[in-house]
Image 1 (cartoon, rainbow, N blue to C red):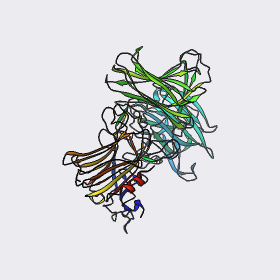
Image 2: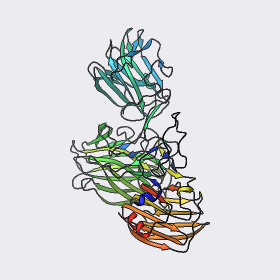
Image 3: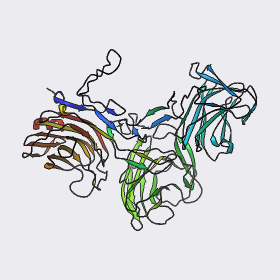
Image 4: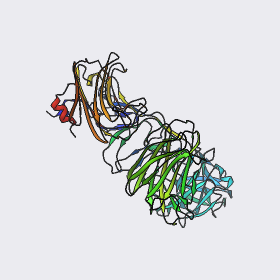
Length: 623
């Protein structure tokens, strides 16, 4: 009999939905009944409940190696322009049933019934942030469509030429970040503009006869599929009805995370983190550029869309990009990170420090070509350098990280200094050299960087992941059993502040009776980087078995238990035994940890209702 045939619970992260991570075993009954409802669902199958709060700030790496975000079309009735959710300005009308860009008859005619200014449709989005507004449009009796937000009276308007497929003009512009017009065939174009939304968050699309606000009676154009999203670029259209349309990493959706090559999918469990940089992707807006010429949406980012920024060296000897954020603690570590790709440059110096001060900073130099880091250094009283990291993201992109304590409250910064081939930060700019950059992040109370948290105008907090199942007594061995887990271990993650990294735990819903498999992260002392089997019965620790230290890599660990018979195996090797402890009744299984969580990526979790033999445990855990 294969070992898997003995399992009572098997979780391999593959099937999931918002709030639920499904097991392979027990298999249960997923088939709908005769009423096409799931009333026949087997409630004893012990699937995991998953929670990440009510926010949508989480991202993951998909099986294609690209960053996946939460996406939302914040418009309602996005292709029903006669609905009451849309406002038609007096003198404008819409007619449905027109031939669309997608071969349907779902397009609309937007007509100016009378002469006048701004014959438009509009909808209030109530989102005060960076928004990209997009719509599919085709020339009718006139050739122009304009877009603005509620600040349009101040002149922040983009006009699109639907005959020639060009940007006709941009007026004002202080709130306009970027704009594009893209042909989709048959005279149709997707028109988009990234705007810093006015406080009322209202988007206006209007017909224009001359590339200006004044139109004549009978002016018309065709429109279809409007979208407004928190983004620097227009992404794939999401059709909304009476509620907004959402996709991607949804609220409470388990995150199956892969590496940059699309391999090694694992359940990603992370602690709560606050991202303090309020506009993480904009490079010309709320960003200081010295000795660089910056442009938005220049190249394909690690997200797989063209929203990577570009900075090219200008004249002068100093070349830096700076993002600032507010810090209130003098003793807490902060982790700053961003994604970078060289344009004729392979070296960069990253600095985290106090804005306006010549000292109080930590810094490190990164060599992208060699994927190496010069050790971090601290400058100034109270400054302490922390963890650094460089992670290849594919397509010559890297994510670089620098953590540290500055020791002074106030406005802090993360700076990217360009370096020449000799590693000097003072050099004459060459005009065509520089970097692509994306996704600046500053995490509060952090000794290492977690997954990317995008922002488009306000700070965001990603809640901690929680994954557990209660009422699972029937799949947990009550007098004997085995618990197994396979996961990726990152020995560089610093959790020396005391937060352990729980891999999997069995308990009775309290801490008084439990069996835990723990792997500590980086830090000082013999406990760190070690695997622990920890058992409590009746509120007392009765078993503690600890391994030696491990470096980063794949881990397979298992604990067999029975009355006066405990054993821990790691990567095929027996670590230790204990023959003086009983077994408590248990009813709950937890993957990761619901409080003070340290990042864990679990590939498999398995329970057996029997204590496997030592030979079987060695086989089960062999890499």
